[in-house]
Image (cartoon, rainbow, N blue to C red; front, side):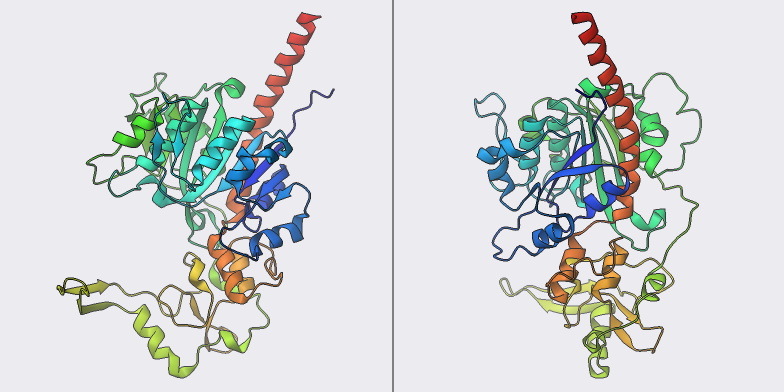
Length: 436
């Protein structure tokens, strides 16, 4: 039997395959995937995924049922579990002391990830979410993220996270997401100095460099006192963390070791090429007429994009108030990375949040075509042209991630995985030799 380490991945909430594209470019092999959209007859995302990667190892069923049901025996062993999942209510319904263990509210996707980690015990984990996760819910700031970290600690993982704006590292979209990486203590240990891990030695720091802190903080031998100490019981965290806080204690980067948390605000450090919306738009040869804005509709777009301070009346209470919002660029600048693509990007109706550009080839105002949205996320042009409407294609890109960011992180996880798994294989070989 070969002692060579393997680099197999299971992908949850796979969407149209952004994680897989980035990871395969960094040397990983995705051997199992799941994508299922509830209350949807036609599974557009899963169909797109399977068209590009094939049906083998791909499951289009409710992940909660798959992990807990008879199908779980068909999930292969893996080294890395990945997934981008919605920001929901993560509260724990029952304490650990009960025979059923910890349980989340029904239908909350984090608990499917937790169940998968319990089932397969992968040595490495990479998760992605909106940065709002660090401060939700409003009633207990930071509680949801604290629950996730506490669960990872309980399962034997150490973790690090970073809020990443893709444009800060040269990509053509200002898309901000939190990436959470974890590995199992019994594979790699945690010879981590938390501050050095955060700024220099960690997977995130190597993949996405940040400015070093001033002074000699990176050189000190002893770790500073932790900023946060999580209770070992996720139920207690669920009930108590963040109560009364107006601001989340979690900054845009951090490290968790056995429930101790160090967290700091870091600044990106990048000197490479930077790409703009205009560079993406310049590659477009044909734009359907439906994407151009009719002259009589321009005023509506200008109003929605512009600043406002308007008197309004609450329909329930009758209370009168002023509604205010700032203005947005109209049209969007071609000299900068694009704004974040949202799920409502598609469709011809006027919207405050859809992108509108001045087409450099004819001077007409228009929306972005699906191929431009795909490239802004790092997908090949035409990736979602699998029978979906233009609006659905835009929706898919609003849910997707930036492939290049995953590729950069994936390469650094691969470096750490090779080191850890090689050492693990040597230990096993040595043990076999001793036993014989």
